[in-house]
Image (cartoon, rainbow, N blue to C red; front, side, top):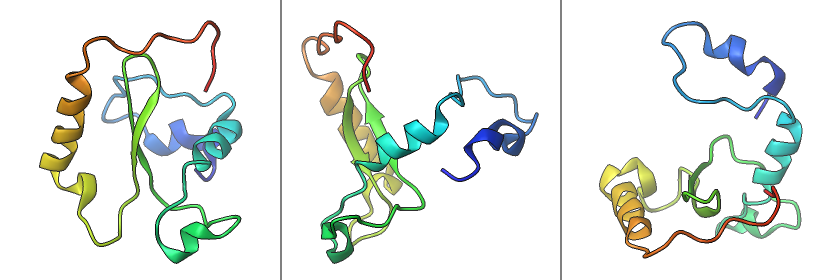
Length: 106
């Protein structure tokens, strides 16, 4: 979320990147995902809560954001792999993925 334009050089050549990395429009991407930074902690209720240093998202097959985890707090969250797998299995049990939007949206 800092120095977005330099992310590929920060990742380096090894190990090889086997997944797409979006860099164009990175500042807009960061500010959009930042809208999901609120937490139940007192600072999360502020009008402009602080940006966490790390957030993880679970995005379904249609590209919809379905869950979010920010490390910290009183529960292990996705740092406990069983919790993350349970979230993925619950999402996988849905009969049909949500219909994609008519146009590209975030």
